[in-house]
Structure formats: structure tokens, C-alpha cells
Amino acid sequence: VGAPLAKHATLKMREALVSHGQAPHTAILGCADSRVPVDTVFDAMPGDLFVLRNAGNTCTHAEGSMVGSLEFCCGKLGSKLILVMGHTKCGAIAGATATYLASKEGKASKSAGSALEGLLVGLSGVAKQAEEELGVGADQDQLVSHSVRVNVFSSIEFLLKYSSSLRELVKSGNVEIQGGIYHLETGRVEFLGRSPRQADLLRSDPSLPPSLQALPIRTTTDGPLPSQEALKLLKEGNARFTSGAAISGKVTPAMRKALVKEGQAPHTAIIGCADSRAPLETIFDALPGDIFVLRNAGNTCTHAEGSVLGSLEFCVA
Image (cartoon, rainbow, N blue to C red; front, side, top):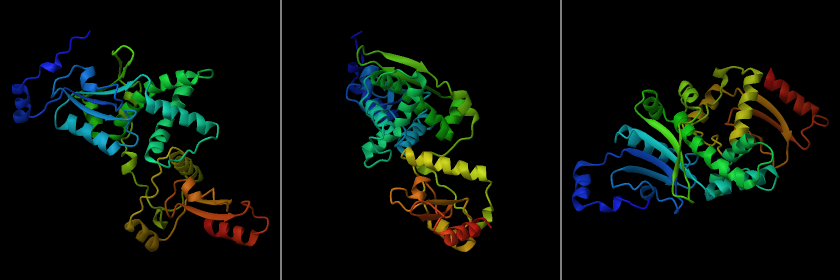
């Protein structure tokens, strides 16, 4: 309504914040877009809001910083509300949508070549979900608009899935995590409430953020893996690879020593092509010890039966 109060902060107020410390009533995960100055949008005084901002108001490629900061705010500063706030005409979401559409048409790489590409690839799953929800016939502008909403809930769900401390605070009723969309055109915030998936996520088992995860090394102490479980591992690894969230590079010296000491126990044997564009361990985000790989031109047994068949018999025996 054009009647802000925040400009009336006095010297005495600022001194109180120094001597007594901060106690923000809300933590906000918002977009870095210069058109969305979060403190101004909420006419907030110094000490009111604990503000985290990045392009796309996302946790996808900043989980250590974003999740850890929110855990500090709610756990140490006592804030009871987290608001994840997107906004209309978001450039990051528009870029992610364009990346997703281009990858569908085979015009863009699904892997990241820079930090920006990594961010857009990471957010492209939001555009995919938005397209599925809107159905056939939605144009790109509609897709971007709906992706903003989907992305807000995606970030909320990321927090509920990957932060054990925030999950417990939400479960106990001590913290609320809600969403909102700031409308550039009017200056008003549309409050979206909780994620529709909150109850299911709180019942699920917590997980570490992707950047902190490490896959276990398979050795002979693990024994054979049922074929359906092995296939599940391959599908999950390929999903991480295509979304730009591979974690197989995190191999420690202890893992390598275990492979030497205990020996290998690959869950799958793969006959693949020698083509340099199809690196099998990379495609399945596989760790050393995961897959037994045979490659030749044409992934064939026709002229290499002694080598290929004998190798497979050795692997599965």
C-alpha cells in the first residue's frame, strides 16, 4: 500500500541488535533476482528476517550452504517459520525450462560444462514435472510460470528430505516450512502453504544431501546381488548421471584398499560398445567394484566369443 515502516530503524535499535543479538522471526529462501529485495518486500526491520538468496531459490546445487544455514537459523536462533519464495518471470527457471526443452529435442547436453549449466540442468527436473502436471498443449510461457510454483515446493521437499534436524522440528510442530510466490507485477506475495507431500516425506527415511552422499564400495564380503536390485542400481546411477548429480567420484583411499584386500564383487556385468561417447562407468555413475565391463566395437560376441563369453562365465560363476 506504499506505507513502509522499516526506514524508521533508529540508532538505539541497531545498538540493541549488537548487544542482544538477532532473533529473526522467519528464515526466507528467495531468489537472487534484483527485482525481489526480500527485506523490502516484507517491509522488514533489521533483525526480522534471516535471508538466503540464490538464482532460482533452490537447494539443488547449494545444499551445504542453504540447508546448513537454515538449520542454524531454526536450531540456534529459534526461528519458527521458513518461507521458500519464488517469483514470477524468474530468469533461472526460464533458463532451466529452455534447457529441459532443448534436451528433449536433442539440442543440448544433459551434463554440465559450467556452474551455470549445472544449475540449469539441476533445475530442469522442475520443468519436466511442470510439463507432466500441465499436460499436452501448454506453451513455453505457461510451462515457465508453472515451473516457478513447482520449484518452490521442490525446494521445500528438498529440505524435508535431506535435513534431519529440520524434519524433527517440523514433526514436533516447532517449525513450519511454507512456500510463496512474489508477483513482480503487483508487489504482492501469494502464500502457498505447506508442500502437499509433507506428510509422506516426514514418514520416509531421512537422507544425506547429494553432495554429502557416498556410494558404498562392493567387495566379496557383500556377496551376490539379486538381478532386480542390480538393475535398480543401474537405473538410479543413470538418473544421477543425466541430472548432473553424479556422486561416484567420491572414492576414498579406504575404499580402494578394501577392493585390494577383499576383492571385487560386481553387481552387474555389461557388454558395451567401445565407442568413446559411451563411457559405461560414467553413464551408470558407478564406483570401482560395481560393474564388470566388456567393450568392443558393436557390443557383439560374433567375433570375440572366446574372450567375451569366457569373461562373462568368469564373472557370473
